[in-house]
Image (cartoon, rainbow over all chains, first blue to last red; front, side):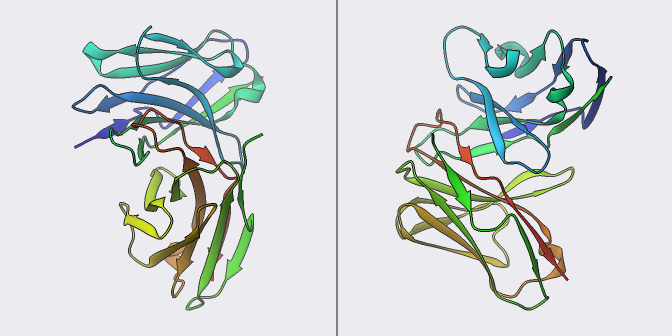
Length: 114
Length: 114
């Protein structure tokens, strides 16, 4: 069955430090992969997505993610974290077919220390 | 600017009441979704709809029903609210892509059932 795992429930980093959020997926076909961010009390906003081509994708707010098929991973990175990046981050995989369904990971909460 | 709106940001209802959560999108999307979000569980799909009057159960449909009479509007109905339905409810929409299209989210409705 398809699934998405985010191993880290909660991460704390200092402002200015680098960030990597992990995401592992289980899916038989070529995956369509997404990262979303949710600020407190808000809906989800798309950061970036991958469905083919270059395995390193750039997103908004200075985020990037790398697709590694051999490791079934799609980790999110940012070289220097800002206090405004404190939020919850969700990784998702899109299912083939035209329903538009996504399977979400459990989420990772990012706290940024001043 | 694309927009998904939800009728209420916060809602307090009593046990046994019938509750309606409304979602409207202005992007002419075929697909619409209802999720509930609980800490540590990520987003869980309740129902989705891929066309007017069409609906399919998601992962946790028990205790919920939906209605889609018009393309832009997707309603979630709690027939008899219970305290374990206290949660954040998120609505989303997407075009009929082959799994590669992002979902656009509303701001969420935080429902408390007392």
